Image (tube, rainbow, N blue to C red; front, side, top):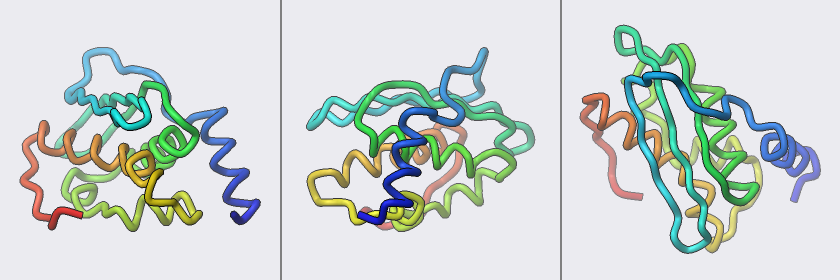
Length: 130
């Protein structure tokens, strides 16, 4: 594993960005990975179809926490339609490491949260199951 990426994952795990909950969110979603026990939630404040603020909360392994932290950094200021184009490759590229089959659900839990949030906000998703 490239040490720069490993250090970034550990930093996002120990110092997650956008961690917490929002008061009166426009959208609140939850997801878990029963295979390893990761549990995450995501809150969004929206204005005119754009993410004004986002928070995630929960617990889990370094991969799931870092993935959620990295994703939320990219969400503020983006439209829901832009975010609907987020792919698993985007998430894996953020992490910058080879993710094993066993850890793939951990890495992609945040993508599932994002997609649930988009559906909750009324966005019709058009993607092939990955």
